[in-house]
Length: 190
Image 1 (cartoon, rainbow, N blue to C red):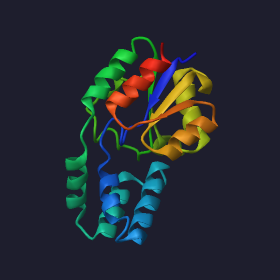
Image 2: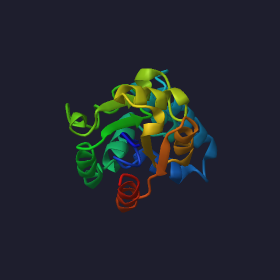
Image 3: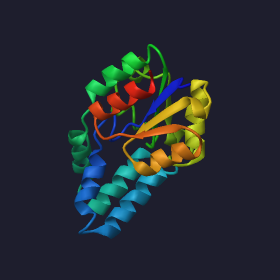
Image 4: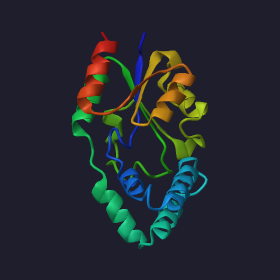
């Protein structure tokens, strides 16, 4: 029986502006992409802070930090339709957020208390020292929700993170659009 639904942030709740930047560089500058990915991973595990991560990535892109942060802010759009649906889901199921993000990253994107309207538990990888697809990340969010791993559905836009969830016993759905995820959940939650 499904008792909890856990959502990813970037690419699901908020458009992934950094992924758009990386996609632009993937063919022309694969070495830069590797360095950006490595930097994001360090920040996601809490090994470097948000400021250091932003400074490194801006340097790799050859632009001032302020310009980089502006591109990120301008490219991130909240999925209000999905957030409204999560508020409805929360009436019958526990809801969680599991995000690979540095400490303070969510507070830069959401108003104080905003996430509390949608989620029973919010897990920030930079705070716990584990990032998806590490088993401990999924285990932490299930533990904070007070449910077993096999009682969770995990939703992410990255296949490897969905695979990580399945490896620990969660059901997982690859997110492609609001209508697709709503249809999939409506079928699973009957």
